[in-house]
Length: 75
Ligand SMILES: [Zn+2]
Image (cartoon, rainbow, N blue to C red):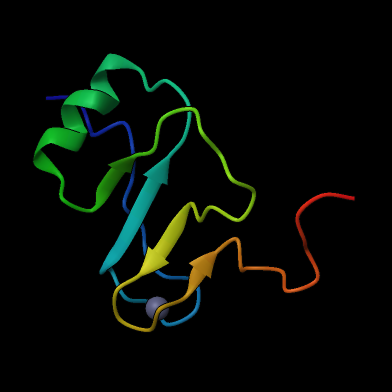
């Protein structure tokens, strides 16, 4: 049995394993299949809004990458 293509990993802030993962763009078929049985894996499609997390923690609310408050829309 091959390992799951996406590793859930742990929260870099608190070390909890209760993290959600977000995948952007068109996933490979193995990831699409994995997402069907992994409630922590979210396929977000190709629309990236700029502050989208790749990881969020259910335990402490940490997000990776962290939201940069200095980042604004437009020039
Ligand atoms: Zn955490």
